Length: 354
Image 1 (cartoon, rainbow, N blue to C red):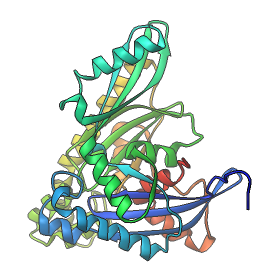
Image 2: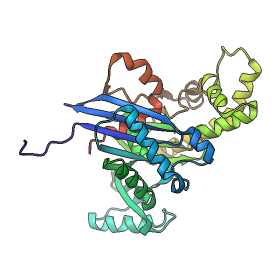
Image 3: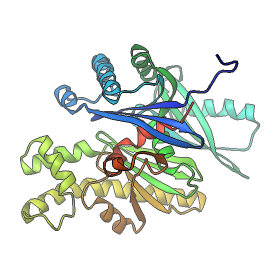
């Protein structure tokens, strides 16, 4: 028996992605996190059959399937904690950076809530609004606005309740992967998270998200275009995308390699052009230059992508490693490095602790 409540030591991060569900359980030991277990189940078969993604309008019809698959993932990974943080996809939210003049705290709260109406395309009564000051300056403040539809929040709560999970927090996935990739790093970075449905561009500087923007161009679209160009099935095109990529000198079939490159480069260039624009805008507003790009998400390990972006944008480019500050068995190192970019959200959510 204890006289004082003990803070739970194990934490669960859940990432319900468009192509897979990922879970990570971490244990806090002193100032370090230790990996206890992790798991993943692909949802591609369900998504292809329904021809929609899990988090948008389709969640109305497949919420029960989502709940079942999250439960299967938890069982597969042998999760034994109920304390969970669930990540909400960026495309299910609205984010914007606004600038406000100097004013008192109470005035600022009212002003931000009023200003938010200009940036959120649905009625304020239908969203949960949050905001944080990301920069204080003599001329005013830069505010990061975050709004998530209550409909989305309620669905996540229902899924958690059905699985007997205690939701410690719901947070945008950008905050989750920023935590796992940039925790304790005060340098500036642009994280390119290339997911199945969307690509998010997130600038992190001084341990805080400064800007975030989503693009509809993403991994699944690359794979579909590739499948069409090569006349192959979706699964085979996905394998080709990662193995052959945009620069594979060892490819035996030069014509096949060329077709793959042509099918992918147009989309990749749109992502890099938008990244360059966003980084330039940030530097123009703050005077601070982005020091590196971190590639995250399922397509981050596409052959040649890191080198192509590094050469085109003339900036240091890294592949995400969310396990860098996590203690884990040495024999898992190779596997964890390979799956790292896909697990950044779940790892970061588990690192939140509250």
